[in-house]
Length: 45
Image (cartoon, helix red, strand yellow):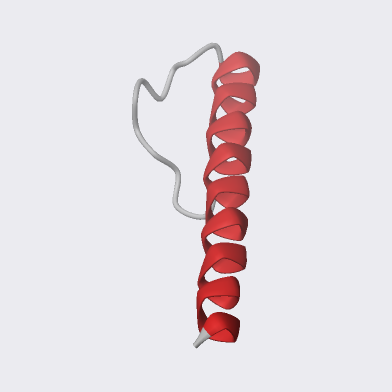
């Protein structure tokens, strides 16, 4: 049971990092493109 909780905590932390990286990638893409895409989310970024 304890191992399951630890694994869930680790997966949650990994997901948070992935979300932050996706947001940062989107912000950088907007900076490069001059935000010509507006608020369109680019899949995979």
